[in-house]
Amino acid sequence: ALFSGLDLTDITAITARVGLLPGTTVGGIIEVRIGSADGELIGQFDIVQNLTSLGFVDFNAKIKPTKGPQDVYFIMVNKEKDGPVCA
Image (cartoon, rainbow, N blue to C red; front, top):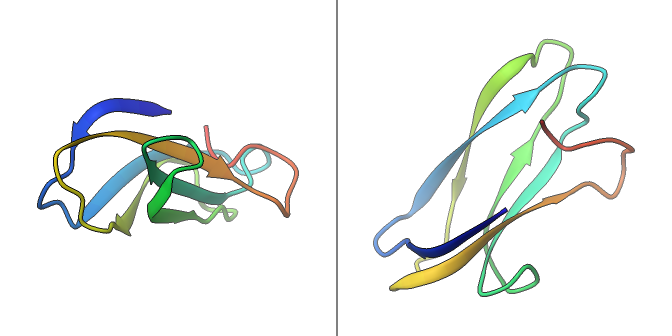
């Protein structure tokens, strides 16, 4: 997902609310990058799927300081399991 012109000045952490469904979603990582989909990594969420993770769950991530408006990309990564990181 791309958020264009997002100003994260003085922001040190962010929260992502993601949908989880046992048997469908498998968890993984959501990378937070600026500039492009393969740009500088400023933070990441470790999305953990377990048998009791059902519905919307909040995950927190610390992020590196940035200044001014940036194009911020949230990239879902899962190299070890077959299935979606989250819904």
